[in-house]
Length: 151
Image (cartoon, rainbow, N blue to C red; front, side):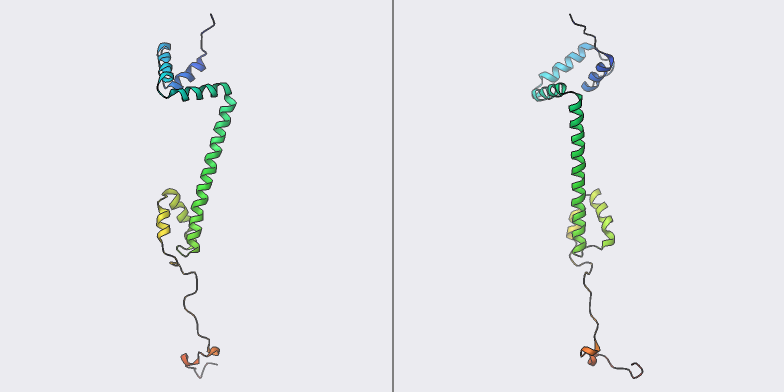
């Protein structure tokens, strides 16, 4: 018969994975494992655990690194989307450029603020000059009375 002693570190990892207390007896651990493997729908979990066990620790570490990289890419894409919405609002005259970071922070904290930003009408902030001057050389003398003291 083979040696059935489990190293202490492995036993602690097993108990932690099962969510059991450190002083749990081996019979309770066996019952917990049986419940997990015999529960309906557990075939996929057992198969996944077997694949991970056969692939080794390096594969699991690589999966974790890939997942972290995926989360970073998703966060960058979300940030870029928010920044693009704010830039579009600036270009359509909804908000002044000085409020750019304010709106980026607002939308990152509360995504529903993007709807509020979208509801601000265009040209709220004038993008073109308002009014114009009169050029006396262009025939606008009738609007301006020439002063004798001004040359």
